[in-house]
Image (tube, rainbow, N blue to C red; front, side):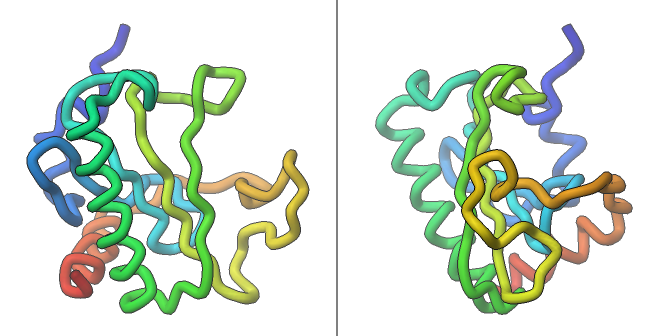
Length: 144
């Protein structure tokens, strides 16, 4: 198995938005909308249920902080919150991570609630350049 990208955090250091004792937040490298953020536990766990109560509280604390930062820095008017489990559920990295997708009227995401479409932007998405991800992280750090 390849090394877990969320466990080799040294490669993510330049994208770090915020962290606390047991969790951290970074912009995702293939965003649905600008500011799309992942909140991850520092400890490698695959499922939410494997998190300790302390880790759950730390993830929730970061979720609330990131929400406010996305409103301030990206003008978010709404949010999609999601995590995927197993390959068939869209989990491409077997390390729990909460997706925080900021939404605005007219953004590139899907706005209607159609369970097969509401989370993911239609069409192919390119990997964002590192400089763009660092800029997103800086803007959100400033908003915190």
